[in-house]
Length: 233
Image (cartoon, rainbow, N blue to C red; front, side, top):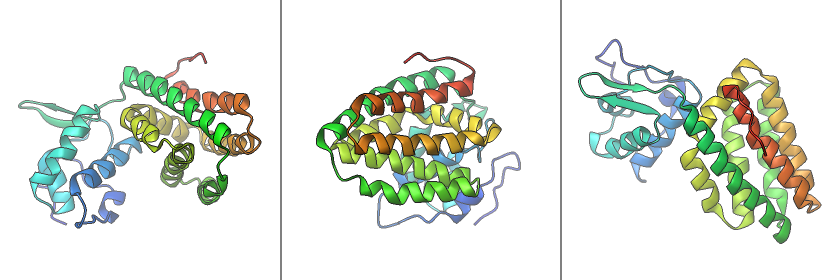
């Protein structure tokens, strides 16, 4: 991979170096997800210089497919671009954290309600719960984050509204950054999140909608603690 020319620019993180781009599929969305995750996991720290040209060099692709990803990262507020100053990874935006929590909570409550009505087979969750246990055992936050995302995506799919998670995903980046920071400062939080997942699945298996909604509220609202606030259910 070519060396970055600007010594002040962020260097590709280990996860980005190890990433494999499927060149038979649309490249822009893949790069967006990879850079987005690196920012959320604080591998690309606030203030790091990240320009369109840098991303091109990291992945060895032309600027054409990068522009879509770069524009979306700016729209998400993950990168801030200023004329004559350049582009840097943004700080966590507390207003976007609140927005993400509100929207995600509303969507996930509906997901949980539909699962209790439809009573689908929940065995699809077994694999990700097992991987979450491995991540907890090894205190592997990146792995837990990926499996947490997969867990909630599967829930939406089981409810028959997979687009609900895609919508939540589109607005929750800053809430995720706050959650990751909280977990970094208190590793026990990852254990608690895993236990909340287990409790939620147990409630869903018996079709207890009220308990399931209470559990998902607690699970989502806990993110707000990362910015030192309180969030009423």
